[in-house]
Length: 189
Image (tube, rainbow, N blue to C red; front, side):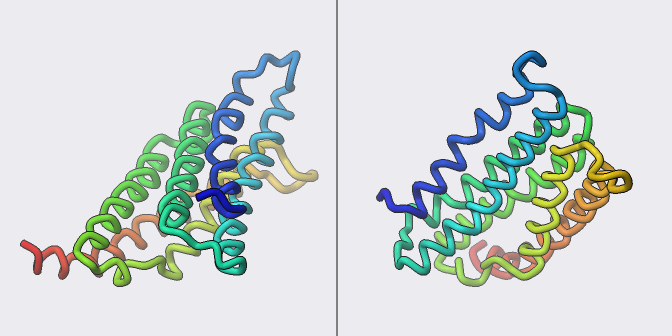
């Protein structure tokens, strides 16, 4: 079903090759600093449309099962692509990327399984998960931008602290979701 919220979600997915490709442009096309800026802008736009498409789906009464499926997929693809790019650029430790990507895969699989047994409501998005997402999005944006902002704001340093916070919250929220799901797992076995 094509509607405005789903179109925004598709645009996030289609932006991923451009987002990654920016770092392969020759310096004659785009300076190193401009690559950082444009990648940060694309990622920030994706983060904003992640919120906007859900908001519009609710306000315009255009929620759908397909949109509910596609939205988190688009989000996870963009975040995974950004983390891989940051590891490639040497701005992020691979272990942090693995923690975050691994958690996303684990929780997605857990949600799918919980939905199959009719318990999807018991593993909805928590406040902790939302805080994790905000710190993760801010961290990735700053790590992509990489340059100082003004004379004293070191985006790499602040982004690194925020991504460590996001990784900690990632593990904490995963433990929360697993704690909620384990009783259901035990009942099913």
